[in-house]
Image (cartoon, rainbow, N blue to C red; front, side, top):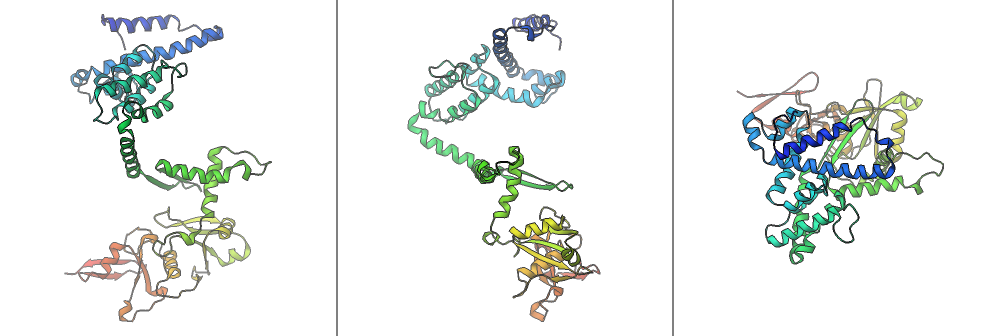
Length: 424
């Protein structure tokens, strides 16, 4: 972007910096001595902080630029004109607004190149989180202390100051210094709010990639992550490994440890879901079972449609060594030849057989997975209906209610699905 016509002290300062850098654009730093390169690196970090501070200051004062050009905000306009990332500029604008409205010492430290943007962001975030009930004097002391920790202008602080990670810890505990009488109470409130926010944002997504791998993406509270890491590291500890074994990268070792952890879980202590959610069902043809060849089918909850994942017969036998496995041996026409013994009406074994057979809700067009469905008698038990598998069907809660709703009629289709129609 051209600076032609910017005859202001700020514009001329920027132009002078650009001109000076252009003059040395061809100079190779490799020819400098090591002390010269050390000084140059430190100077560049300081210069970057000064440039960023000035940009932030201009962003904070340029709302009219966005309004004039019809842009959503000034960061969006700058990004469009310069090809930069609008998200980064908006993050800078947030810090700039905080500095402009409340924390001038932070801006002054950046302006002289003593604080980086990352340090300033951590400091302003911590200062903005201070409780409203502390007075101005305590706020100013908190700002001064954190700036001194970041710039290194405090006895006992390393040269160059603390980095963002250490500053974050100091900002979290700054109330202990400036307002110790309320620090414990406010810390408890802050932690409770953080835990509530973490609980609200917790998620885990499971998506099959179709190549034998499944991507698991999780966002969990810190204590949950720490607990999982501790459990996984119990499997990856060097003391658990063969001294001559190849050392694996940590992410690979933890991935393998995750599978080992699941195999060590006791399914008997897990809650039931639909009667049998903690049971792994493996289907395998009788011929393949006896010949030690072929493939098997694993009822996989991450597949919400057909619910079955193909695995090798070897993998099926390995699962049988450690997991709660219910083998479903199939005959030539895929009839279930053996699926455990039933003791009651729609027992766990019976529901497993229905799940294996139906895969999903049998309401026409419904794709609700079998694991979320309820077992239903085709002929009501109260009217003499039988209690065997041929008289059972899986229906989701919605279609199960339709099945018993007297305002609807049910038609059983040739493929076994149920079609519903409102009575006239």
